[in-house]
Length: 393
Image 1 (tube, one colour):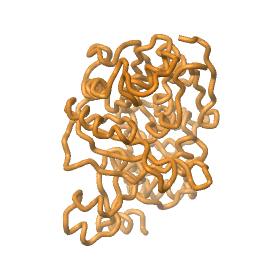
Image 2 (cartoon, rainbow, N blue to C red; image 1 turned 90 degrees about the vertical axis):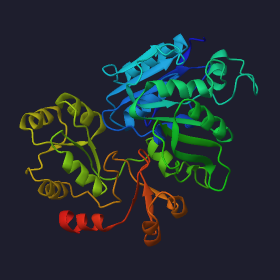
Image 3 (cartoon, rainbow, N blue to C red; image 1 turned 180 degrees about the vertical axis):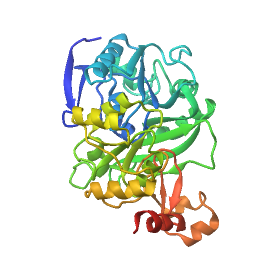
Image 4 (cartoon, one colour; image 1 turned 135 degrees about the vertical axis):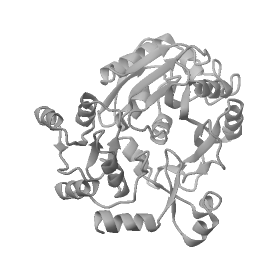
């Protein structure tokens, strides 16, 4: 491998990525896959064929994973990915294994909540092979075909875990077949278009071991607008736009408050297993406001310059009222998923027809889906009661 590398500042300088000057270099496909692969707070994340580690870095930046693990066949790339994790502040919970994803012993089986992979797009021997060996390995399946990737993901997934990947749109049936052979079932699908009105060129797919009715098809991801500028989602994932409103992290004693905040549309992270030092570090890294009733932890936040609030009550409704009064920049928005904290994605009404009860479909016009767990939601009396009884709206 050519050991000459470049250092690429990314996400407005929030992360810095060493990658080969010649050979495989990450592109916008990695950004789209990272945005699609929502990591819940505290989850264990595995990247198969991690390359320079870009997917792990992006997921770590945008979310709050408990651990980040990469598997990489090429020794030089594995060393580079380890360096990237270390230099971007993930040495304490990030590691890269130099190994073959096809080897059942490469990583601990059944231990990862989220497995991601940006696999080779072409089958071995098809299309033009790059003259750069490292780029050829990344682009064509000389060492791992889609069935190998699916089998590796299935071995690594913990019960209830999910696998997210990306592939050329024309290889969707190949991907479905590979997943089926590994005992995985598609749960979420999303096409990627360069611009509105153009044919999809990529497919983003989430699969899990539990079969469902059928996969939920989310609205297409449009990379660019008519001027050629990146669209809103890509701008957010590229770090061009700051997320609106305050963002919170609730400590382990404020789980109900985190759900109330999510119902109002606020971004409220929560991990009931989180230790105080981890919470403090995550809030310092991400700029979130820590919500806690723990006075020693509040004192540590004050000393470290981390914004924190004591919601001043043990009753969740009063806690919510206090937080809303103390952070006037909060604005009511569409509810986020109570489990995943992901913002809801609007579904085409016809897409919801076979996924909700018939009466619900007939009596409602708008449906949403969680882009992480796929749960379908709609405006209903329970949400109206919450707004009236809890938020006073």
